[in-house]
Amino acid sequence: MKRILHVDMDAFFVAVEQQRHPELRGKPVVVGGHGDPTERGVVSTASYEARRFGIHSAMPLRTAYRLCPDAVYLPVDFDSYAPISRRIKSILSTFSPVCEDSGIDEAFLDISHREEAPERIAAAIKERIKAETGLTCSIGIGPNKLLAKMASDLKKPDGLTVLTEADIVAKIWPLPTRQLLGAGPKTEARLTALGVRTIGTLAAAPLPILQEHFGEAHARHLHETAHGINESALVVAWEPRSLSRQITFQQDISSKRAIVKELKSLVETALADAPSYGPKAQ
Ligand code: TTP
Ligand code: MG
Image 1 (cartoon, protein in one colour):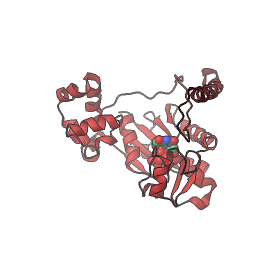
Image 2: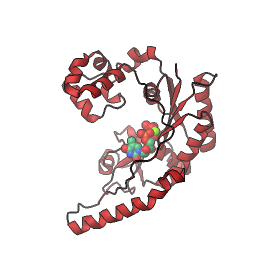
Image 3: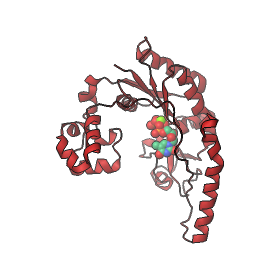
Image 4: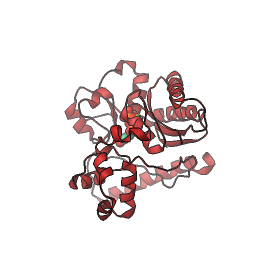
């Protein structure tokens, strides 16, 4: 039986901002765009206090502002978050050589080869990250990546959650299908149309019916995931396949000249950044 940990930082961008501006702790704080909530742009993340107003990632900043005009709005300062992310990943890699970097604030660790109880390893990781960065994270422990990731999401912030195969019925099946890893909003809407709202109902749905609506491969994936089955290995080495840059226009643009000018500038920025992502840079 494998033992996988999923580590995910709590309100990452906001937590870094609160670390350097302690007066912002305990307040509704939103990081997004240029930090001006009257401009176009989206929320990158919100503090747990701001989430109580209904603010969440990917929401337009203007909507967030309507929900909570008194929140502190800050611009995204990616250059400050990236080194902290790297520091966290390097701490994690000291706990296991099998470490998958799965995003700016998250990673999977395979600790199957270690003798100690996974909870003790997780507690030691939380302590090291806290001591070296001042930040908290939530850790999920499971027999595969799927259950480890779902576990880290179950209790946040500063959570430590173990999910075994025996917990699936009681802890996973009552959850809405939205919380099933890999089920995006379109899949969720189609499942709802079929009357499937919880992961448990999905698990009980006959495979041929799912196949009719989602096709062979996707149906099988949904069925297995709802049963907590996931055999994907940790990806420890990878080469980037794509690199993108984006901006949000304050006003819509429609002139071809203006579009080409913006496109050119984005392509140039992406190309200038490309060498630092190449295999030689690693
Ligand atoms: P998440 O781990 O999804 O969110 P979080 O760390 O802010 O909050 P949680 O405690 O629930 O884990 O994403 C990590 C960071 O990635 C987040 O701080 C900001 C950035 N991000 C975006 O810029 N846009 C997005 O839509 C999301 C989801 C995240
Ligand atoms: Mg996070």
